Image 1 (cartoon, protein in one colour):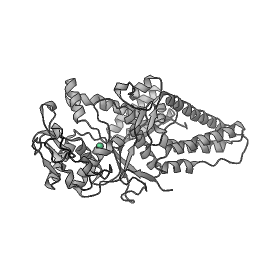
Image 2: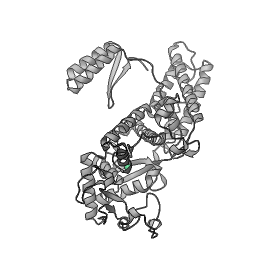
Image 3: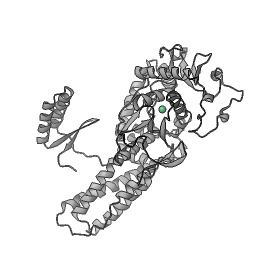
Image 4: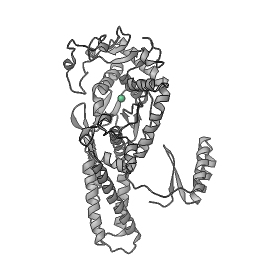
Length: 472
Ligand SMILES: [Zn+2]
C-alpha cells in the first residue's frame, strides 16, 4: 500500500511521491523551538509526531535528511535577554540545552541538523534573500527602515492557509507599528534596530537590524535542503502567517515550488482547555517527570492520538499510558519465557502477524490509533494462546521479531536496567577518544576488548551505544 498524507496545501489526502523518486534521501524541514523558555508538552507533541513520521518513512525504506531549526533570535528571545540583563546567546543557551534533554527523555530521534538562526552563515543568507526579494519588487524598505514583503505582488499568498487576501485588507484602523507598511498583511523581513534590541543587531544594506522570524526558516531550509523540499512540518499554529510567509519568501527568490507536502500537527489541550500559565495547566517535560511518570510514559501519551486530532492531556490519560505500557511489558516478558521453553506444545501458527495492518495503519496518514489498536488486539490474542499453552517457541520468537520491527517506529521498548560495568565504560571512553583522533586500529582493538567482556559497541549518530552481547 502506498503512503498517504494529508497535505495542508491541497486540504486533501495525497499519495506520497518524493520530488525525485530516484534520489535519496528525501528532505524534511521541521520548525523547531524558539528558545526563550523551556518547551512545553504541546510543543513536544508536534516533535513526537515528526519523529513518528521520520521513523515510519525509514521503516518504509526511505532515507531521510531532516533539518530542525532553532529560533534563537526573535522578539521573545530579545525581550527575555533584556529582562534577564544578559547577552542574547547567554539567555538562550540553557533553553537550547533543555530542549535536547527533554527530546532525549522522550526518545525523539535527533534531526540530522539543527541550524541556529544567529549562525553568521544563515544571517548572511537571510540578507542575500531579502536583497533578491527587493530586486524582484517583492519587498520594500518602509519609512521605519524595516524591510517588508509585499504580499500584493505574490498572488499565491494565502493559498496554504486558504484565505483571501481581501480578508486582510486594511480597515483604516492600523496599529501604530504597522503604520509604515503598504498593506496590513505585509510582514517584516528585516526589522530595523531600535533601543529595545540593545546590542542584538547585524549590519545590512538597509542599516542595522535583525531578520524577521519567517525569513530565518526560508534561509535555513533552502541552505541545507535546497530550493525544493519534500515535506515541511509544524504545528497548526505555524500555518499562518509563518509557513505562508516561508512559501512567499522562498518561492519569491527561487521561482520554484518550495514544498511538496505540508503536514501540520493539531493542538494539545490540557483537561479540555488551552494550555496557559495563567490557568495553572502549563506543563513541561520535567513537570510530568516530577509527578512520577517516565519519559517513555509521556512519549506514549503524546504519541497515541492521530496527529491531526487535538490531543487532550489529562493525568487520567497518563495513568492509562502506564497501564498500556504495562500490558506491552508483560506480553514481551511472557513471549521471552515461551521462547526459552524448548518443548512447548506445538501449535499451528494460527496468528497472522498483523504487520500489514500495523504498518498499513501508519501508511494511512500516520494513523497511529489504528496501528496501536492492532498491536493491542494482537497482544490479547497471543496472551490467550499462551494461557492455553498453544504458542510454541518459534511463534513467540516471531512475535518478538515483529515487535522489534514496530518498535523501531514507536520506540516504546521498556527501559533496560542493565548497568554498564565501569571497566566497559572506561574502554568505551578510550575508544571514543581514539575515534576522535581517527586512530582506527586502536578503536578496533578496544572494540574487541569490550566484546571480550560481553558487550557490543555500535557507532550511531548519537555516539557509541553499548548493549550486552546476546541481549534481545
Ligand atoms: Zn519555521
